Structure formats: structure tokens, C-alpha cells
Length: 360
Image (cartoon, rainbow, N blue to C red; front, side):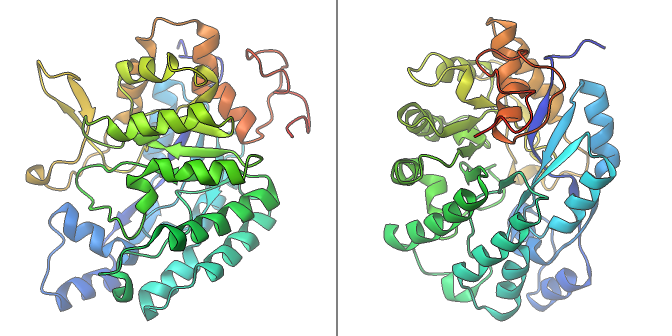
């Protein structure tokens, strides 16, 4: 099978899937709820059980010629399960780290301290099992009552972002900043204010020029409004250490980023959010005609959305050099995540790839 690039890495994958365990079901009953829509699901996700969904993931990787995936946790998923999968398939998976235990404690007790969350991140990164921090910086769970009706001021949240960046700097690891929303899960301002204000990252990028920052989704996680994409592109243009994850971009959004000064293919990394249950909508005659979005009236989907196939078609429609596509689909990720590659001088401008310990 012809692959889309010399080495293809999906940098945003959730290999775990949720099942409503006893704890979540009990809480739902106490609240007089059934988990029937995205809003109910999001409110219970921290208590849901997760299971290994790698059978479907490996099938899609084989189907579409994806060589490797970077596994991320979200909504109750565990670092341990991702590391187990990486150790089972070391040539196919790498992992990002999140502060799962401190988040679980906050859900149970209502007590939140971002310094404890960053201490947990520090312990995880010290193991050498993780290639980055994410999905997103440390943040209080939505279910913690004390923060339900509290809006962070910039100084408070920036202190949490800085503490996360300190861990990234200590271990020379990239840090992800989540941007956008899928339309279904209600992503609040309290939890991730920078999610809705990517320009905040100007200050963080300036203060930590040695730490790579990746805008998860590059401002586009769902729908077709592009205001957050525009902000992410501007920040990436202003700072050499800021990158855009583009797996939910349709073709025209790639062109928007590629033609903007100081961005280009060197700043783009492919990551689809595989496993996040974001279906692709088709609206004939619309511009764009297809895009990812959870639709409330459709209810929670049950099948495995085929985001890899849709996303790769958007990339393959680009009329740019194959060398540029090789960077977007794999070369930039190899460099950022310090992943070994057997051959040198295969990626434009990335001569250090393929050389042991060349990444600085």
C-alpha cells in the first residue's frame, strides 16, 4: 500500500475508550440522570472506566499506513494503560503524560492544588516513559464544586501554565496547549481559559523559548468557525517554539497556515484526535463541505469515527512538495518528540533526525 509520507505519525490519539463503570453510574443515579447526551457524558467522564481500544486503533493504522501514534490521556484515561501499550508495541507508540492521580483526588475530595499536579507530572516525566506533556497543561476538573462558578483571572491561570512549562523545561519535553471545542462536550472557560484565548500563549512562549509548545487542534477541534485558528497561526508565526497540530484542518486551513509568514510546513504536525468520538459532518454545498463536530441532536455516537481516513485525504489534496508533506505527517514530530529514525537526511531541514542524541 502506498503511504502518504515516508514516515507517518498521528500525534494526537486516544487509545482508550470509556465504559460507564459502577462509580459513574451511581453518581448519575444520585443526580437523577442517565448518560444520554454529550453534556451528561462530559460531566461524568472523570469517573468513567476506560479500556484498551488498541484493536481498532491498530486496524486503522494498518489501513491508512500510519507508522506510529502519540498516545494522550483525557477524561479519566490512565497513563499506566498507555505505557503498557507502548511497551507492548515499542515501534508503534509513544506517550504523553497527565496528572491523573491528583485530578482523581480532586474529583473525590473537591480539593485542588496545581502544585501537587505538577509534582505528579515531574514524577512521571522522570521515568523516561513520556515524550511530552498533554493533553493540555494541568487544570482543575470541571466537577470540582469550588471552581464551578469561579472564573480565573489571567494571573491565576498563567501561574498554572508556568508551573507546567517548568516541568517541560526540566525534562526538555514539549507541552501541549488545548484549543477549540468539538461542539458536544462543553469545554468551560474556567477549566481552560487559554483554550478560548490562544493569544495568552504569547507570554508563555516568550518566557520559555527553549520549550516547544504545541497548539492541540491548532484552534480547530470542531465546527467551521476559524477565529481560533487565526489566533493560533499568529502566535506560531511570532515564536519559533510554537507549533500547530493540524489533523482536524480541512485542506484550505492548511493553505492558510502554510502561506502565513514564519509558519510554513516546518511548524505543522499532524494529529487527528483519533478515539475522541468526533464524527465528520457532511454538508453538501457548504464551505467547508465536511468538518468534524459533535451534534447534540444526533446523540452520542457508538461507532469508531474514521477521522484518519478523512484527515489524510485533506493532506493529500495539498498541491505542495512531497518533502513538505513528509515534514507535516512525520518529520516534525520525529524531531519534536526525539523519536529515533534509522536513516539520516530524509527530511528537509531536519538533518539531525536519524542521528543519536542529536536533538537539543
